[in-house]
Image 1 (spheres, rainbow, N blue to C red):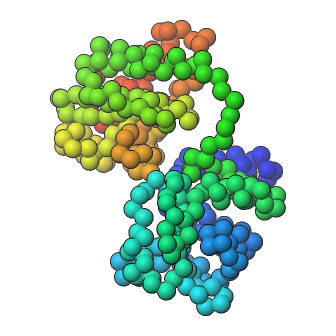
Image 2: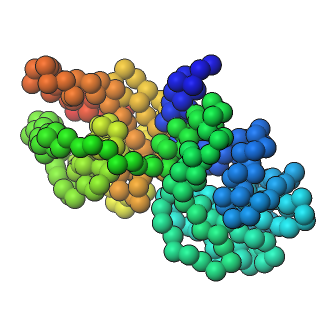
Image 3: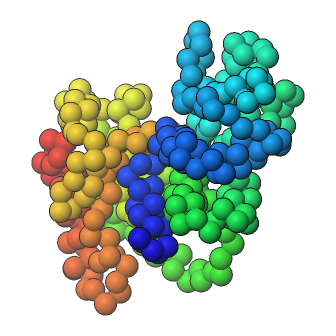
Length: 309
């Protein structure tokens, strides 16, 4: 397997195994398979050269379960908490449960320095690993591709902002189909930030609330539902969403249940991603072709949860 195929494999894996636990599992597996990577990872987390023969994934003690736990070859106790958007940091809990352990915390968002805990970022680890000789291993290179996607590590790129004009057009087009034709109503237009651009839309009978728009980092158009949104769903729609098998897909969309992508409760945990997205990026297509593809996606998503438009 050459380098390009290895990177491609791990990049594809990142879209199918994109949860926080998946990142922990794959990092753990690589630690177990590659001694030099394990030493590098542990040194990054704790700022000291250490190794272990007892690295444990999800070690349970009382009501605590740190992601990584180990006793070093010198008999010292350590634990690592891994985060990807989840803000439940467990700092005080682990201090109480493991008072003698050295602790490290690694996340894809900034956390202020904390006494008695090494606070790190996945971006820092990515940068150091990318600059190390370990990157010459094709599996490590693939892991870097996986980590870059999961931790949403960004690099400054040359910009061509002319296409930003298509964003309000997309929302107008979605409104033309959903509001004007299919009879839905706007719930809230404020479904936008630096990662996502969309709107919240609702319907009273059957009662349903959803987010629809585009992920700016991937150019994917999708519809997001979250059955826990207060007052947003009829029981029939909740049941239909819960009964859909994760990673179910048709020729029109792929479906996944992925709380890690919900981005602080903004876009939903139950996500339908449009498959025929290339039509919307191709300005050689006619207006009717683009409208048909977008409408087809929307209609098929709602058929899947029992709403006939």
